[in-house]
Length: 102
Length: 167
Image 1 (tube, helix red, strand yellow):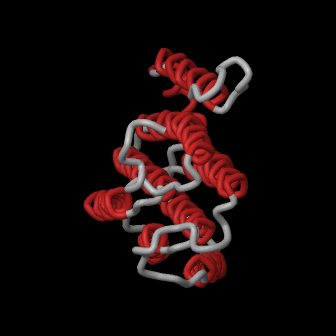
Image 2 (cartoon, each protein chain N blue to C red; image 1 turned 45 degrees about the horizontal axis):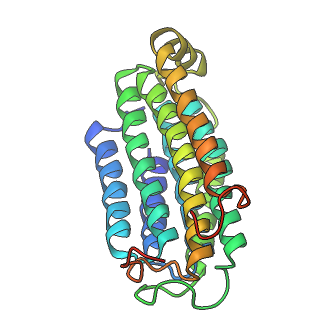
């Protein structure tokens, strides 16, 4: 069985990361921006796992566990903020969130 | 090996659908399809523990949180999303997941014997590395999760203690 070359693994992770970055920059809706951030985190985790399995070690999967835990904590706080912001202003448009008061 | 590249291509297409789709639920379904295909890629690289964790934690808990928020805020119907989106169809996550399932069934049908020199990093090795080398980081991650829990509860928590207009 031919193992997959490392450049391909990192290339896939890079493509997914850049797609998530484009999503963060282009989308206006707050929820879609958080979704794109999750895409970026997932791509970074995949890069860790790919490199560690290429080297035959378990350290990358350990880092993936930590990334998962951090993403979970971040999603909890971020979605709480989204809900709170939705209560204040009925829109989730970030272009309209341009004033500090109210 | 072709299963890996097909899954990676489906993951890239699904991620493209996430950033292009208009309705939040369609984008969520595309992201779940992307996570499942990446989990297949991780399993083929010899990391079955990470593949299982991705399905259980990422697609099974974090995406469910997103679905709850979409349901709570009522973003599912109507033109509540961006007007600058490119695609307007819902068929993208459905067809991608169908391609994924067809590919999986074909792969299971074709390869009936396991290869001899397939290197696997098992869950036991990951657990050894996690709790022996990185035990202090586990404690720090537990601090982080507790902080996230308390923060999420406080942000969306009781309004009586906060008074009027205070966030």
